[in-house]
Image 1 (cartoon, rainbow, N blue to C red):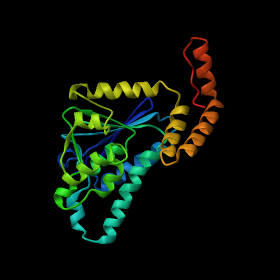
Image 2 (cartoon, rainbow, N blue to C red):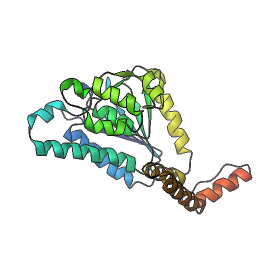
Image 3 (cartoon, rainbow, N blue to C red):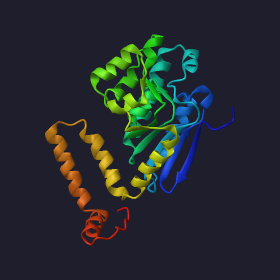
Length: 259
C-alpha cells in the first residue's frame, strides 16, 4: 500500500491529521505511530498552530494496536518498547501547546479509545461506539485504562475494562468521554464550530491555559491554586491580555498579536 498512513491539512492555524488506513480500521501500527509522532513533533514547534483535529477515514476511528503486527514478534522487550512508545505518544498530545480535538466518526476501541480520552476535546457521530475490549481477547487494556480513568468515573471505566462491552456515543457524552455526540451529517459542522471559536482567540491564553490545566491536575489544592495564580499573573503581563481587556472596555474587537 503506497497511500500515506496519515493525511495532513492546514487551514489558517487549524491542522487536521487524518488516520488513513480505513480497510484495517486505522490501527496504531508502528508505521502509524511513526507518522503521528513526526507530525506532533512538528506542530509543537509551529507558532502558527491554533489547534489540531485528529480524524480518520472509513468506518472506524481507530481500532487500537495492530494485533497481527504484535503477534509477529512474541518478545517481552518488544512489547515493553511498543507500549512505552505508545504511552509517550499519548503524553505528547497532552504536552502539545495547542488544544487537540478528536473527530470520531466510527468505532474507537482499545488504544483508539485511549486516543479519544487523551485528546483535550472530542466530538463524535451519534453512531460511533467506544470500548476497551482487550479483555475479550485475554488482554486487559492496561495502558488505555490510564487515559480512560482520568476522564470518566472510576467505576464506569473499570466496568468498561473488565466487561469489554461497548458504549454508545450518547453514553460516551453522558460519561464525559466525548464533549458531544451529533448526527453524522453534522459532525464536520460541529468540529468547525469549535475550531472557528479557537481560531478567533489569542493563541497566548490557549497555550498558557492548556499547559496550566494539565499541570494543575496532578497537584494538591494549594499547589494548584499557586500555579494557577502565577499563570494568571504572567498572562496579565502579555500584550494580548492588555489588548483584550482594553477592547472589551472600549467596546471594539481586539487585535491579537500572539504575544
